[in-house]
Image (cartoon, rainbow, N blue to C red; front, side, top):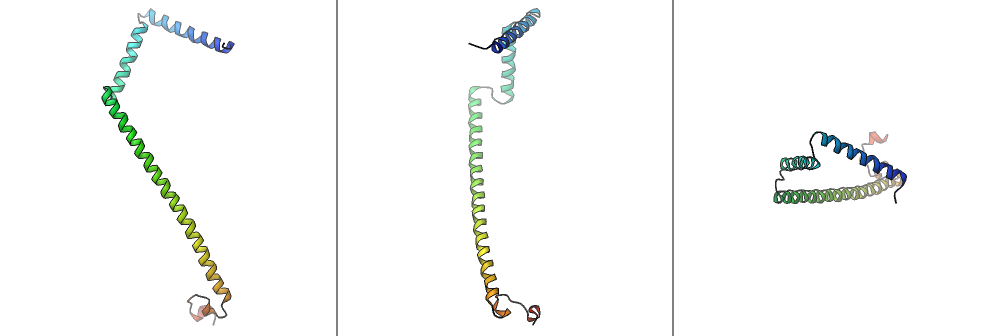
Length: 127
């Protein structure tokens, strides 16, 4: 059972349809004529899309499905590549942090500047 709003809306739609039918009848246009015109328009549109018969429509749909599958596969490969890049970047960051900590420790633990692991000329060390 519909609400008053539903019934009111249905009445408005029914009135619009009756009004449209009355307008068409005044001009000698029947519902069948309008339906025929709509079907002709649909057929012309399908022909413009290269879908003149069921076989070509099936072929076109199969081609689109294949393209969509290829696109999905390529997208998956890109996502996998990006994930690999992220993982490798994290590993590089960890390695660089370890190398930095090692070099800094060498510099702090060195008793002489020449032992800190850096190749510098004596003038740069203030000697």
